[in-house]
Length: 101
Image (cartoon, rainbow, N blue to C red; front, side, top):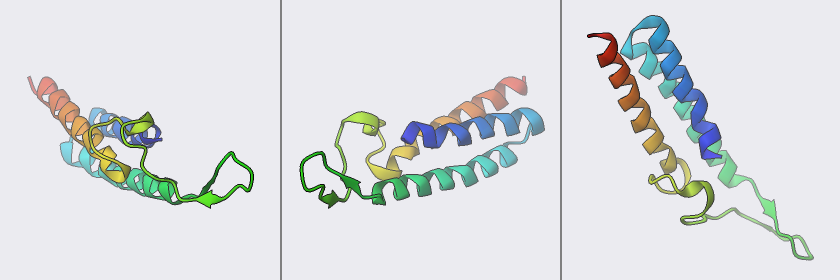
């Protein structure tokens, strides 16, 4: 879920930088889409799910600790997107430095 939520802002950041050669537009537009990604993750955690045993009791999704997509180094929930935001900033700055040579 997290990886699907952060791929579009990352791609948007790279595309905007390649088209405009401006860091502010690249970071601005990707920032907007990262906020949308954070909202998607919050909504994902608020969706009730059903268990597989008889009775189908609905329960709130809880953190899975270090299992599944939570292994990002940023924590659980919307905090797990922070490493992807930092990675986007580093990559855009590296591309910017490369093009300025």
